[in-house]
Length: 143
Image (tube, rainbow, N blue to C red; front, side, top):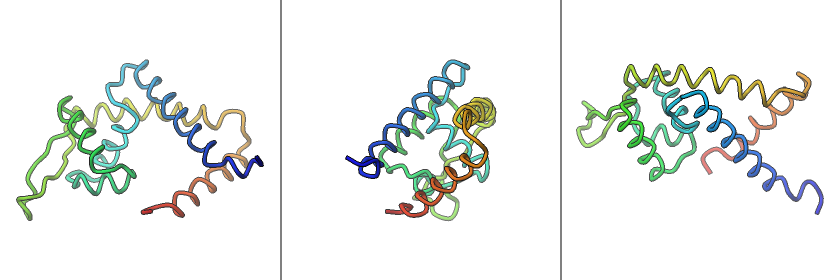
């Protein structure tokens, strides 16, 4: 098998490893959210009152998994659901002050994980790697 033949395998293994590493780092630092949950809070920090489907689309998370993420964040007091004033059948997800505080804690740890990822590589290598990941993200977005 040539190295090209196992790119999907390598991507999957690395993605899972980085996710596990980040989640362990968050837990060790006393942060009460996971990497996936932090992505939700970061999006709500940028723009509050988003529909769950919009958050899921941006993060690439299926609706069923999004429901579980939001349920856990709501139970912890980090988000609330409110009726959309323009469509009372729809719910908007809102970040709470506690959610914003937890997101700030997570940012510090995630920044450290990002630095760990870059460690041992030249600035040029990191730049090329970032461009490859960005290109893959655009190529497979919405598929």
